[in-house]
Length: 263
Image (cartoon, rainbow, N blue to C red):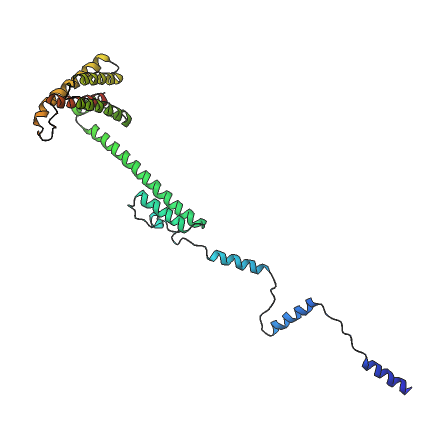
């Protein structure tokens, strides 16, 4: 009996103990918990999303930011003076857009400042023109009655009409100068007189009045040229230009002014 009990104890002590293995997940959690108790940093990241957030913030920190984008003065924002020309303002805008390309807020601030400066310049020019017209109109209204009556015979046509008629009579003047050595300017004067009467008739709608006015303008220019030409110094006039040619040039000027600015 005692021999059997001794045999059983020897067999029990010789048999190895089998302990159940824990999953790796629990083991890893235990190690992290143990490290936390000892005050050591955790070695395993708990969330992989923190890595992506860090990368995104790093990229935004290196984006160029326009330092003056909060300035209220558009000239100060672009770094130009208040009396800068449009070319200088445009160059500053292009330089800043190139320097801060890719940053939307900076680009919007630069473009907004440029638009404000251009609009202010346009408004200033428009107001200057309006003020000039109003001043001229006020001076005419405050002028004497005889001056008002005199100004009533004149008008200011469009630039297109003025330039066309100037080129027309300049052609007759050049034609007269080119042929002055061979023949006189009688033919050119006749054509210019007919043209002057035609232009006046377009405005007056009265052929008799237009003919009288055109002839009077021609005669007045010819008489004035006869008095002015002898006063001109001889060294200014080319030697091939005769008295008749110079008087004709004065008549061309008068006919141009008459058919262009007379009502």
